[in-house]
Every structure is written in C-alpha cells, then in structure tokens.
Amino acid sequence: MPKLITLLNGPNLNLLGLRQPEIYGTETLDDVASAVSELADDLQLAIRFLQSNHEGQLIDWIQEARGKSAGIIINPGAYSHSSIAILDALHAYDGPVLEVHISNIHKREPFRHHSYVSQRAEGVIAGFGTEGYLLALRRMASLVTAK
Image 1 (cartoon, rainbow, N blue to C red):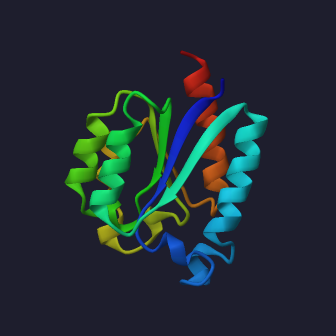
Image 2: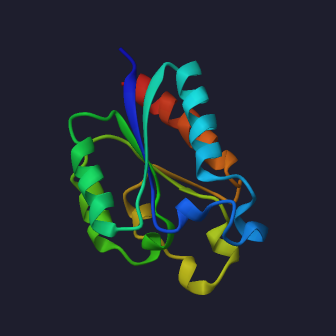
C-alpha cells in the first residue's frame, strides 16, 4: 500500500497561472496537481493535494494528517510569514514536513524573508517555480522510505 503524502497549498494559490505570472509562472494549480500525481505514482506514493485560502482549514488538514500521512509538503503562501497557528499545528504532527515556495522569498520584500513554517520543516525549497513541488516530493519519498 503506497504511503500517503499530504500536500497543502495556502492562500491565493488557487489563482496560480493568473496572479502575477511574472513571479509565479503560467502553470495552474491543476497543472501542478497533475504533475505531482504522476510523479507520486512513479514513486509509489499516494498524494492528497489540497488548497485553501483559510488558515483554519489548513490547520484542520494538518491535524487530519496525524496518523494518516507519512509526510506533509506545504506551500503556506503568505501564511509563512504570519501564522504561528500553522507552525503549532505542524509541531503536533510527527512526520517529516517540507516547505515549498514557487518564488525565491529571500529575493523579495523584506517581510517575506522570514517563515514561521521553516522552524518546523526538515527542508525548504524556494525559487524553482512549480518544479519545487516535484523536488519536494522526490525528497519526501527519500525521507519516508528511509524509515
């Protein structure tokens, strides 16, 4: 039975491909979900790919992952820089966590340089566009099969 990976996307990622394509590219979140699903199959993983603009919903999904998901990949969007509540939920999760950002947050506005989520994540992938999701999934496969 394939191990389940929960992949969470935060606010405004539903507008991927439409919102600031000069920063985030032209691929849609559906395009990303398809590519991630295909790679998950190749890696013999199951994927739960979710997006919400609501902090509480993301927290609920993190809590639901406890005891069900072997790992969490999260692109928290702007919540990276503001949500201690998401950080606390991730601290209550026992498996590996990887953080993904499409843009390089360290080359952007100073308020984007800090991420609360990074304090919990085993690794952060930023600035590789939507390919960062695939890089994160490959790394997660290594982490969850090493156990």
